[in-house]
Amino acid sequence: MRSRACTVEQLSRTELARRLGLSQGSLTRLAKPLIESGLLAEASETVGPARARQGRPSQPLGVVADACSFLGFKITGDMVHGVVTTLRSEVLGRLGRPLTTRDPGAVAALLAEMAVALAGGHPAPAGVGIGVGGLVRGRAVVAESPFRGWRDVPLAALVQERTGLPVVVENDVAALVEAETWFGAGRGLDRFAVLTIGAGLGYGLVLGGGRVPFAEDGHGFGRHWIIGPGGPLTADGARGSAVSMLTIPGVEYQVRAATGRDTTYEEILAGAAAGEPMASPVVGEAARALGTLVAQIADFALPQRILLAGEGVGLMDVAGNTVHDAIRAHRHPLADPVDLETKVSDFHDWARGAAVPAIQVLVPGEGPV
Image 1 (cartoon, rainbow, N blue to C red):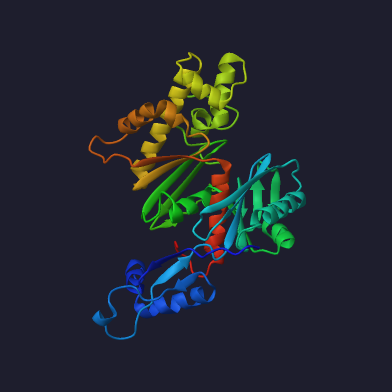
Image 2 (cartoon, rainbow, N blue to C red):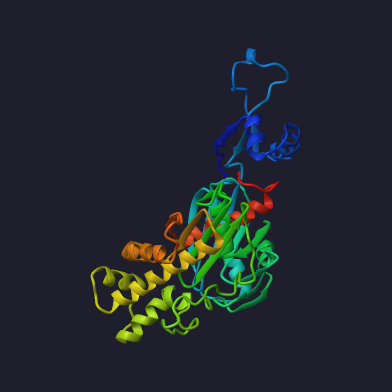
């Protein structure tokens, strides 16, 4: 394994203590094991002239972002997407492999093979994070995953046996929310919400800087959140539900029902942009539904920012004005504008998100670094 120069971002101990709300003594006690593990580094004193201070010099501290690496995997119905990241969740490499089996042991073996390939040429991995669509128990067991057909699969143990590395398993949306809270759009915010659009809908809420767990995690958010009672009925979700109106399968289902043809989501968006009579009404209805849902989240959760993410947020490129019109229509006229950020995510972004719970669990002491 080739060596790499360490990337160290420095802050004075006084500034670190101020930002974290700690005393100098508490900071020293917390920093010691991190310095010993190589995750923090002390630098020579550079803050102010030495003659201007009295007492013991205070050495600045910095995170050694590439002291070790972390592996993140996103498992879909037919693919595994993997990344290797630094301690600060910066992606160093990525890899995708087709998935042709549902057998948990075979999936774990594929993950182990990908781990070896991803780790080559990078700092030794400290752990593995795995994101799965479904219900995860104890960050270790996939209690239920409809995409995989799994129930009570001890995925963390299966992968750890084959890699020799600590493994953290998390619901994929929950992991993405954690990643955006620590390293992305929600960093430094007290109240933050994430809404994902893709094969399904995902939702996450952060209060007080921490993600709020809720019972619907992994059970298919939005199937019973009714946006338009007279809206479409699809195979997945109640009539007029957020799932029926907004997900990629829901939009494709509506166009197929109207035309009798299979049309991809990208083709539907392109058709709507060109004013095609079959695609435009479906996309317009989806945009109004999205604006209504965002307004309701803003009204009830009061987030400082809402992030739209996932493979389906290309809707904003085609019908963003309609979305914003619907948001305004469902908000009080004197309400502050919704801080809405859009991030088109591919599956490697989901894999990066999966690595973050591993960083949270395996790095001594929790908190953004």
